[in-house]
Image 1: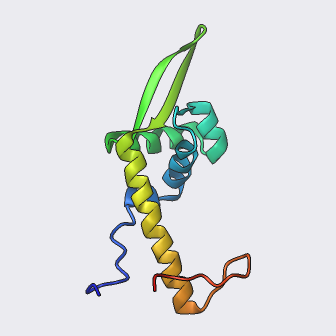
Image 2: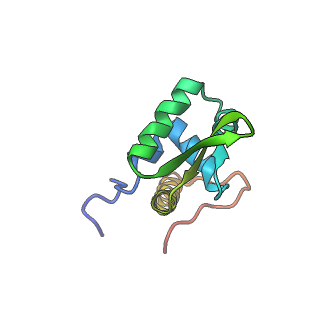
Length: 120
């Protein structure tokens, strides 16, 4: 057993912020990426907030922006990098462990009525 079993070091702060979690979750389901407008609509963020959060993710090497044109109109798309996809998967594994541990500690059940089980 680790010294601090509830430290949850794998909860990467880059993903754990609500807006960035929404952005990365949206991108995770679209390996070829999404346009800026699509991400904005899916997350409900303003242009400024979305730009700033994408910048943070881009600086960390988790997303890549591709700027170009669709016809004569400028178009920016965003996609997860391989590193971003792998780190997000690790984050989700840790988050699942958090949920199992919390459910076990509180005796909680899932919305489907099934007991949430942790590792044996």
